[in-house]
Image 1 (cartoon, helix red, strand yellow):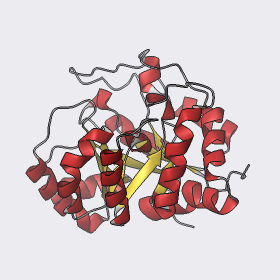
Image 2: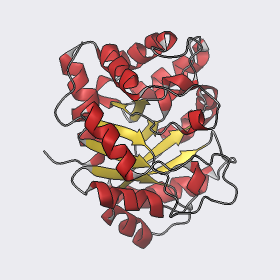
Image 3: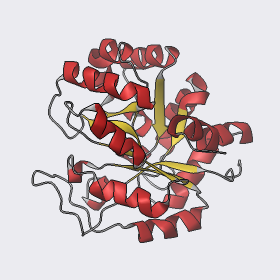
Length: 274
């Protein structure tokens, strides 16, 4: 089993703080999971860096996420935010100064977007070095692939690219083409969303994870998905954070690959210093 690298990054987690109201249309309304709560997880697991991802529960109100980055510290934390596609350069610059490094498009819990408007937004975000973080089902990639290939910024797919244990060969071919293009990243997070085997090991997700690692080892990331909003909503069993991290280290198999996935790759994408 590889060891955890010294500057290991959790590239996907959320904060839910009662000081900030959920969006009126929010489907997921998890109990509080604060920065103080997450610090205990960090300490227990030995994680040094973190990316706070804006959850669908807060809609486009990024105050909770950005407050969390400020509390966690600018050297150790970054954010992925949710904005209107019409957001201008000045507002993007303001968000960047507060630690934002990407914008999230959640098609798993949202309406179909105006892809042309999103492409224009990402063109405005390009000078900042931002990326698009996309959550969608694997089956949606075939339709989205031409659009993704034409974007001016990299794309990061959430949650193992939502590759199920028995993935459709055509959808996998599309995913492989996008990975071969050199601008697609994947977060090796939340295996419980598509696993049928279940906890603690989610063994039926191992093949998908190792396949992804073999395709693009320099563009794989790991995230805890803490505090596991789907689990708090009762959609899946609550996972164990330590087991998720140990599982990811086992997927990597070698120390060199674990160092890439948990330290080198996130440092490059999110702009963490040495």
